[in-house]
Amino acid sequence: MTSLEEILNPLTNFPDIQLQEETEITNVHYHGHMSYMGKQVWVKPLQTPDHHFHHFRQISKLLTSLSLMSSENVTAFIGMCYNHDKTCMLLLDDYCPRHSLHDNYAQLHSVSELKSSFVQDLLKGMKFIHESSRKSHGFLTSYSCLLSKNFTLKIAKLAYAQVKSLLNHKVTVLKFDLGNDQEIFWTAPEVLRGLSYPNQKCDMYSLGIILNEIFMAEPPYSDLFLTPKDVYQKAALSHYSETYRPRTESRMMDHSMKDLIEQCWHEVPEKRPNIQKLYRALGEIMDLKQSDSLVGRILNRLQVYATDLEIKVQLRTADLISEQKLCDALLQEMLPKSVVERLRAQEHVQPTNFSQTTIYFGDLLGFSDFASSATPFAVVTFLNTAYSHFDNMISTYDVYKVETIGDCYVVASGLPEPNGEKHITEIASMACRLVQEYENVTFRYNTRLRVGIHSGTVVAAVVGKAIPRYCLFGDTMNTASRMMSHGQAGKIHISPESAFLLKSNASFCLTPRGSTHIKGKGDIYTFWLDASKNSQRRSDCRSVTEILMFANISSCG
Image (tube, rainbow, N blue to C red; front, side):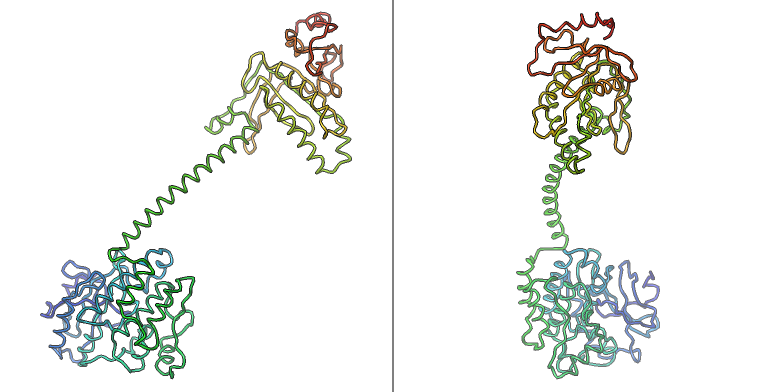
């Protein structure tokens, strides 16, 4: 950034002025963002035909009036001076780092609050100009609507055309300079046709075009692909049988806003509203307040968002807690609660040895015949009904459902939380109830429950990471499975170890089965557990101790 003091002669005696740089190309290199006396300015060169001032009084009067104008929505005028060799005049404008409204359509798409802020700033600036000694802007475009660093819209190029005209020895300015044909998009038809000087009604036409730009967030006529020359020919050379205006869409603005914009660019100047009427009408539609600012509106919106977010967070938190409970319930169906807590804490679950456990194995005799004749859907429905029935019943016992394998249902007691010597009575009571009630259900077809029970030591561990499973290992599991597979339909087959643990409990009646050859185990003296309802030890039942002594296996247990 060049320091202006290095290239300028001392300022003339003219009052200070503010105008914004155009997009046209100039061969004078004093052009753009510079520093002058510690202030950021924008410099715009203006060529003079003979490098001398004419119309001194008019220029002095114009610059004096501009220097007295002060509004937060009109750019402040800094000054005008010669360059070092007096080949051109330089206009010094207040620097707006965010450039023009025309350069910020993307911001209008992404930040809705900017639309209200820009509309309010634009109306306040034009109201100030129309009520000032200047009376009108004359050449208002979205290029002359500049944005400060805090996104305040400021109207620039005020009286720019008059200054340029006087420097070129012209006392009056009519319509526009065709050399800068971009302005045609915002120029009123009567000015294009040479029927009127720029005035307040022309400003209202330009204002309607800019308001439409703000709400549509796109350049004027972009949907029609019209060039400035096309617009000039259609507006200036037509016989007024057709008017050409930018598009308006109801999805981008409400119906009242659309009507106001169309009134602003009405073909007949007298039917366009004045700035005061437009200010009041838009203030009611958009709820604009005199004291509002972009920062204030954003803070109010943030407060609304914060309140809304707090409510949403509370609702989402409640949903999260509910989902977490559901997730915990599902996990605890797969894994013990203590294991779930360790895994959630990212702790490694070590294999655990449980010395006092009883294992239940139960399968459905006749299921293979049923499955071979039924559809897969019927098989799944049957198993789901049976297992759901079992799940409901075992929930009242101190047991843990280990797994289901086909038609085999595996339950353990004494783990994952040890329960002392209760493990055998919990499994025995549960087994009696399952067998009794399954005999009476209506959905069992020709299947019957066959149960095997064995007590001993097992090792429990979590296997797998993607779908972890709580698995039991040890000979106790194998023996319990053999008790089931060598049992009979509707009966509970138990090992001598389990029978020995039940010897002191009068609630259960054991009947010796005798020595039975168990695959992989040899001959074992086993028992039937009477599952009849409210079974009590009958007088003809021999005591377990007596039976075990007779079988020479009293050392078991």
